View 1 (cartoon, one colour):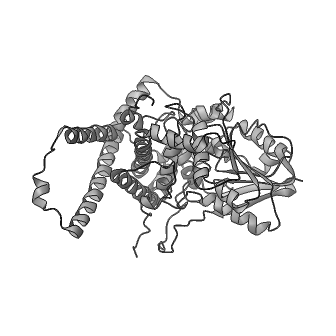
View 2 (cartoon, rainbow over the protein chains, first blue to last red):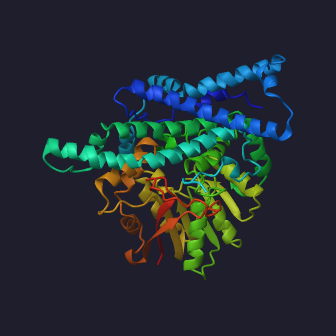
View 3 (cartoon, each protein chain N blue to C red):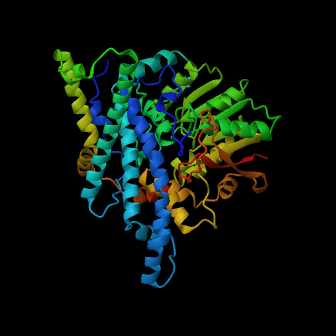
Length: 120
Length: 395
């Protein structure tokens, strides 16, 4: 077995090639990206809720009140919940990580790369 | 029936033994992203409207003349708020798609590697070469903004770049390439069968085969042929081979080598194919690769290359500009240069004869198309599965 990969960080890595910014102020780009990721996660949650509601409806095994009052029951459940949050934040703050990676390793623009590649 | 064409749910994608496990949320995330891609294809029409209604009139008023070229047009469009928000959302969607795919495959990198190894072990039909260099044009940037591109190995024996590609292509194309993402390979196979009913290739080469999704339909259609897929990225080949083994293919071989300098003998293939490959090469390499295609092709052999639609003289500056969006903003930079090359010139430079040159249009064959998506759709430039195919018979 190899060392476990820090998949949360790796999943949000910046690709090589300078990132294009389209808004006059990069802050707009940043906030929009975070917002869209949150929008995505809201959609994910909505789909999960939809599955749960449909299954509950079909089987009639749970009440809404039981869900309302649920808290983690043991260490494993607690950790699973916290890991989910860590993954979630890595995902929605992707652009901040990528800007940091760009600061560490500045890239050429794609036009420059296209010119380079044209000579390769 | 919906008023809008809906992308197929991601769970329709074909599974196989090296396909990553996914959770409910991971599938839901891909469903969201496929829908977002589809939505952005629709609102991309706003770019043309903004251009016609305000960008071009403003330019002409300020300069007292028409725009000369795409770089003037690009500079003017980049100031337009609709183009800005559309581009920003589209880039963001592509980044989210990569993040979503990588978070699926990287958490199970070891498992995927083991699954691939189990199918690949001791098989002569997978030939990796540790000395094969990834070409400089692939190292210059990460194509399709896939961090690490096709070749990076995060663990020994890594297959995650291919597994990520396999799960995500369905999302970017909103399922239009079919359950196995092989709509391109199927289309070219049907065209060849129909156009050359007597063609019985004994040996077929697919260059830049990636995860092998487009070569398998060819192997299936010509079961007596020896089919070889080559690529420089070991992770893609390991996955391609394991995938093909699990899907029951016995006539396909995957080999790691550079298409510009293969180990094959002169005139040893009846058919040399590439699918969406040349636009991911480089300005000098493209000629070397075509030289190699010519060299390994038998006299009377067929070569075909599925590519992006060519830019034509009658294409508007705006269309050329918007077709370049993916090249520069979704990291396929060489496409922004390659469309200036006439395929016939490229082929003639390697020895093919002008009169043997052919060019056709092709559209993906999609096994998910049940006829329910009937709503009219705008063309999603650079994304729609409608291609230009060029090639020749070597005489």
